[in-house]
Image (cartoon, rainbow, N blue to C red):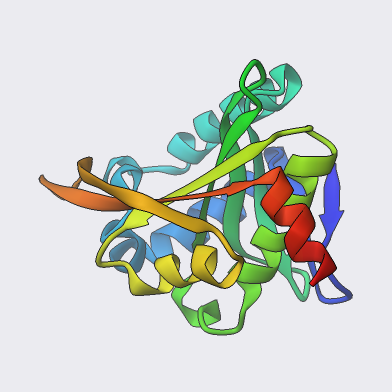
Length: 183
């Protein structure tokens, strides 16, 4: 399942051919990503990403998670997905990361915008959540730009690099997105 963002960018559902590119990109950006993503320190070989890809494919079949690679000008530059989908309550969580050399170009924001559309239209969700480290300024700007509501701070909500970090908790409701689309 591919989501076209624009003529230079698309989101491709994670599959076997993405294993090596994801590993190489994450490995190259290990220091950059390691500040915010707890899994990066456990990634010692391509097998780690292979297990992620296999798990992602199964979860997509079960419609509980949809993991994508962000492809910009035919190059994998990051990852995005909707996770922990609760079909009963129509809630999902968006997570993302971008290689450092592609930050600041608006790519993650554009990818999020299309993924939000996918969540509300295709998946029929009513609520989307985004959590990010309170010190991760770039990540915080994305839900702010997209009109999410800051609901609060989850104190010591994630364990990264042997320390607990606080997380901002943002949400968007379908009715807010519909309103936003007509502005």
